Length: 117
Length: 117
Image (cartoon, rainbow over all chains, first blue to last red; front, side):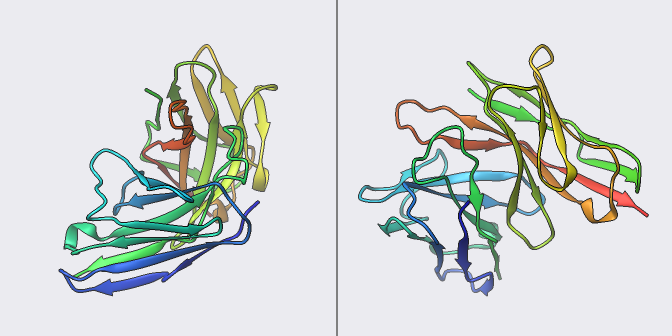
């Protein structure tokens, strides 16, 4: 299994500002994923972050709004830019194993609860 | 495209009674199915998975799930519910994007389980 630390755990931000969420894993992993969970909703994948390459964004998500960094195999950041109240959600970091095989379960951080006012 | 459906928004059960949380799936090829639980203000915790083999899969906290290929279902079960099982439960399927090998998860809408004393 993997232990994932996400910071901050929660924040209240003013509209128009940006927030950077950090995700630290206790082991090296090939793929890291960022999900959004809007209030009362399921999880939606924002992007996949691989070390050494640009992140791959899902339909409806763009790099200018959600820039991602992946400087090494144990760390990633997600920035929520120019925030509006509609960005109020829980943001979750997720990893597979170092081998990233389809048989393995994903592990999740505790999430960052973001409220934009 | 792969998808999962959780037809019930909420399931209510008395403590000590058996519980079932339903999940149906639609995949092309072999399904890779997972169950996760989310407690309030927490991230997702892995419960169990079906990859191949026995149709009855046992997981954490006394939960099990039954894979039924003919009914394309993967229902989560527990013989005797506890009040502490009250949480949000997500069924997920692996999205097999062979082109980019991302192996991301696609989540159902979630089912809130309420176990009353």
